[in-house]
Image (cartoon, rainbow, N blue to C red; front, side, top):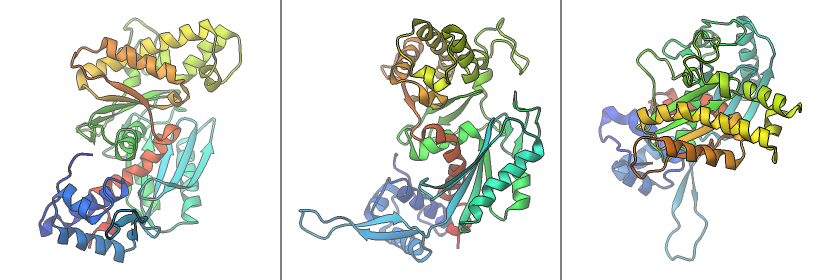
Length: 389
């Protein structure tokens, strides 16, 4: 994390509070002196903010373990157990989940409802049910964040028209949640949310530009550009799964031909591997199979197909890293390394900087944790009540 400049003015109080909270919660700084150096804020300003945090039960202090070095041991700042918690809600193709996290994204409680069919009303009923289970045990909530499959209108909080999603469309998720719960509600695309979680707390913490690639029964992406989640002015997220790798290819449910989803999504790959092997295994089992040339050839073609789209994005965005999520977590390390090789072989810019390909730090929970991170990100910007006075 680069240096984050605070603002030494009365009007910037909320901004400074959010900044100091971010440095403590993400583990970037552990002492008042570190925070002052990192932000450029006066020591007195930092001490005043820390004292307010302590008085509000947000932060606590403890003495570091004794060392052999002479002198007083530094006082370490930690997130207090009394600090507000956040709820994350994930609306996905086969389940609705909710998670209760502290501000550092430590999971406290997790609830899930799987389904094989769905209606608009059930989306909200299931969402209410998993959130209510959490609220039955915890009332000190800073906000509720939602991560939703796309396409989604982020500005208005509307689930638009996902492909293969039971014919459901135009669901005003944010409005429903605001009408039921007296907490701030923040909503984003599920892969944007995952990218945010990985940027704030995960594998992308020290990376300013990366693409989060989520492969499941759909394929999606979230983009971190110059340290921030990319959103266009309409509030729409990238739909990388519907970039074409063959303009004369397979007809996609979106109406276009040759979309990447039709070649490399999990359910497509699973059918290919079952047919080739004549074995009824799971996606995970196939990914850990060894010694099958037929499966190896199918996986190599999958990587080649994925690399077409990734390299189009690489040539446009010049990211430092590709972060893999969803079912990619099941890939063997050799498969990840092979994709990294292909991407770097095909990229245009010969800048001697290798683009890394890594699995998400939060694994298959990246989107769910990302939902909660949507709330925490607002806290880091000083935009939540518990940081205001």
